[in-house]
Image 1 (tube, rainbow, N blue to C red):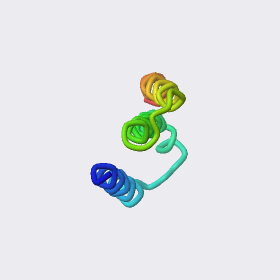
Image 2: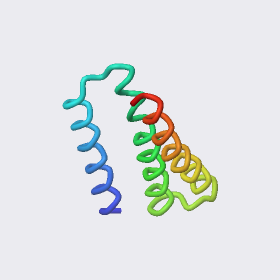
Image 3: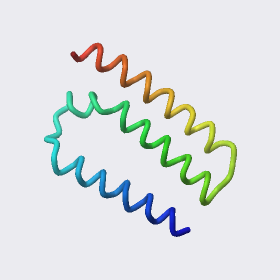
Image 4: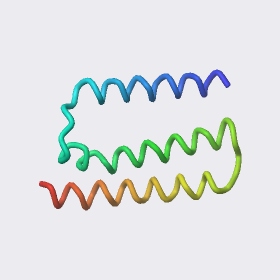
Length: 80
């Protein structure tokens, strides 16, 4: 349970850095949408490992990870 607290603190720290250091415009938010989806997939895997071992969390994490990676590739090709 202690490790879950460490992961949650680290994720909240990263979120505060992200919010403080980046001025949000729509293009910035769209550009980082893939990374946000990958991070949400990681959060699902952490929840699966420490709190709730059910298969739907693994499927959701898979969808978020693959969607985030593909979204990051295609969105950055289109924006740049």
